[in-house]
Length: 288
Image (cartoon, rainbow, N blue to C red; front, side, top):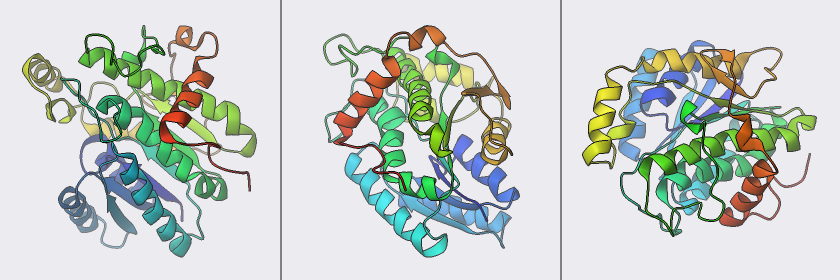
């Protein structure tokens, strides 16, 4: 049985993807931000799939200590139930913030959750992904286009904060991370993908936002597609045999992404910066 870990899985795209993979016979481990939301999602999934293998973990993945704690729990669980192997890691958890706000680690919150949380969790689960010849999938967005990484002020600490600018940059980080991950680890049989889920009818734009952001999201949300439609792309990438070989996908098909953002060594620079911000010396440790 294949095993998938999904972050941000108590609602929206993450929950719909868990549902889709359970339909395909996966052993699914969901991660939610709170115990209440996680238990509620587990109850709903277990009611829908009474004979499936489902478990849940919770933690505020904006905080690096929480990522480490959740990773420790998942690794222990995998060692007991799958001999340590992980087939798919879906880094889906995300946030929008109207105002400049930092985590306990002093990192701007959108950057912390939308990029660094997935980066650090992937690092911690690399041994399991290697054992499972696994795939890593990131939730990106078409908003990554026409954007550049502001390496001189990546967390908007020295300039006027832009909610949209900070968000767009994190979605570009997802694509750059997938690119650099493949450059480093594809030779081991590992693959990473970035997915544009499209405009989806979810609540992300209402969480800890206000003013114009909340108003705009209310208007956009009404035009969004159901999360189940976006989940099909994640499920396709998780199950395709042989593994898909392109980088960026929308509606179950490879599509163009902003290659201009890849000029120079941006993917490697971002990877190296992310390692420093997460206190990592060797990403993923040694090969098996």
